[in-house]
Amino acid sequence: MSDYSEEIGRAPLIFFLGAGASLALGKPTTVGFWKQLKDNPLSPKEAHELLLQLEKDVGGAKPIDIEVILDSLQDWELEADKLAQHPVSKKLGVIQEGLSDNLARQTHQAILSRVIDTYSKVNHNDAYSLWGPIFEEIWALNIRTLPIFTTNYDTVIEQTVLFSDDILRSDKVAAKYEASDSKEYQHLAPEGYLTLRDGFSLAHREFARWDHWDFHGYHEDKVKLAVTLFKLHGSVTWSFIDLEEREERIGDRLYRRLEGEVGLVPPEAGRNPLGRTTAIHYPYLSKSVPNHDIYDVAYNYFLSCLMFCKLCVAVGSSFRDEKVVEAIIKSALMKTVEPTGKKRRKQGWKETPIRHEGNKLKILTVAPEPDHFILQKMLKAHPKNPPIEVIPFEGKFDKDTTPAVMDSIKQLLAE
Image (cartoon, rainbow, N blue to C red; front, side, top):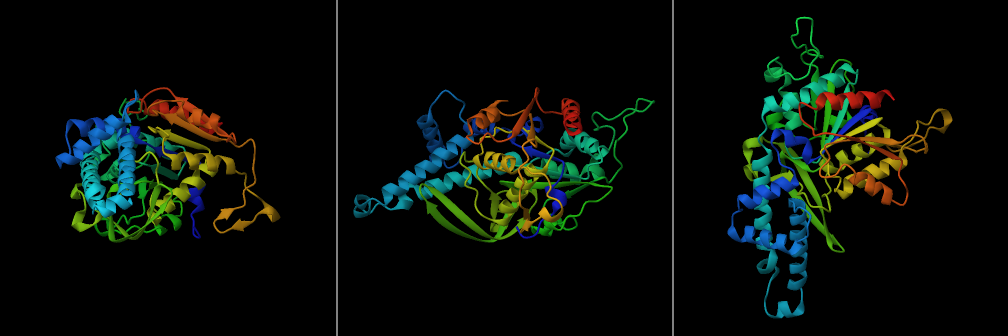
């Protein structure tokens, strides 16, 4: 990345959101999504029968979720692909489409439609009741840039910011604000204190095209809190325009390079609006995210923010995403102090790291799903012993617990 905003990359506080972050707003986790899928079968019937058979094949005592099922579907496609290439299959005239491609494509499309139906509807009032108090208190800490990274497809953060003044800034929906002598709730921040940077124009969002300069050209406002939002796996409101796709198989995995502009569409537009492909990466366990600037830029900023932040607040994450855990470990191992004077050197956008043993990456885990200690277990098993301190927050994540979450954040930032 030749161009880069240091004001985003060196923010003191960042958030990382997993599926559990939207649970309080009625959005299911990966386990909950699979349960809903089973209760409301997919169409066509053959696609749903295939998924149920894959569930039986997986077995095991642990809860099955959509990530496990999709991984099994991917393995099934690969096995069918190998069978189709067998000399006997070719001799008998058995073609790949008849074995796997057609049914797999129908299954993928049916799941994507259900994903969009499930995660596109967001209640503005509920979203602001959950996140509004957090953003106001962060503004009161004199923080003006707040990077948020999420693997979720929903628009909870966008809706909170975009509708904060127009619709939601009323005492009726305010939660946990400082009280005046008259016991009436008072906002910690003035009207218009929030702004959104998500790669799309704020002025013309219905016609917006994603542009990395929304991030690279960012400069901090001294008055407003800018929520810089990076969606690592896409969004229900993103669609590719004139998409070109190339595939490369390395071993047993398929890697994709995507080219084409990304446009913004209303959440209610549904799957393939105007014949375009929705920019969502399926929630496989092994995340071979396709190469495209919308994913690459987000991942690069994620690495930088983890490396330079004072605190990362991880909300509702299972930490099963290999690429996310890889970024956490990689950034912790590169965590640096700022080179000064003649020692300061640059290699593109990256500065040459100087290891500082006392500078740990602090991660506050809030409502992790399913286990508070899953990240600690991964770190203990890592051969390089990355300098990461995991601080579990005991309790779920909803509007009643956000005051306690903010108290923990303030305490850790003050250390």
